[in-house]
Length: 343
Image (tube, helix red, strand yellow):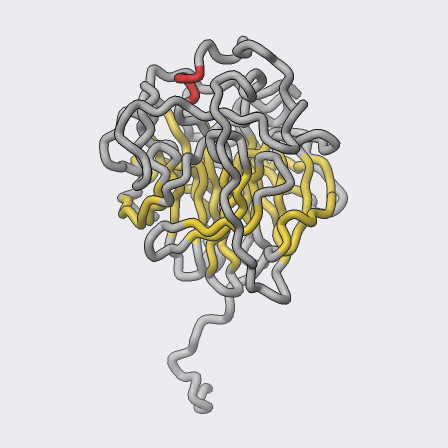
């Protein structure tokens, strides 16, 4: 299967500054990272894009010709000891791969041990979003519009010994829109899509019928004006029905109204996020985990604080680019009559 074509844009290279950066134009920092050497050997810009400026904001797979092209190294972020023990299990798809690891493979790992991943199965199409059904049994996924097979489709990944099984091609989106994220309400089974379009990009929220793959526009997810626009690269919804979106245009976490698509800023995480990536709630305790890819190409698996948008790095290996989902069900809702007198 061929690499995805990176969305072209006239966006200028002036990502919103983090609290520790100046407001000057920022050149994308691309590092040949430890463990990533050898993935892309192109010494010149790939034919897929003509300059680094074009990928200032992208929801795509990291393209050929990326590493070593646009310069300065990016340091690994410090990690903290994860306190969860025992841990829930999560599923992830590495859509990029690394030396010794093929791309488009499904792995499982314990949330307190991201680096120790167990191979489960291969996926043929390029996955750009995934989430579990409320019973934590069905692993739904959406595919890229440039996938070689089953493009722009909804399907189910057979978790331990099978490939992507299509439900159908997603309908109801303009041809030029790019799929970015998928989230399924863990109580009601209502499903939502994020998609981006335009230059600079804007983001739309859709509802998605899991039985027919039909999408219905809810509205535009507006954010503060920026030359980089808005790409809600991933979505996640918790047991309270609160939908969160990660915007790589301003490196911030947003709360999204599922009825109108109106957004409320939670906070900026101050990392230089870029390219496709996933996030999901552990419904057993309400924690929001993310597989954050940054501009250098490094992976930072960690946890969002849904009160202020801060991000805590828990692991940064193995190298790759990840979508992910956590198969945990919500606890039973509290009863108004849970006092020993229920009828």
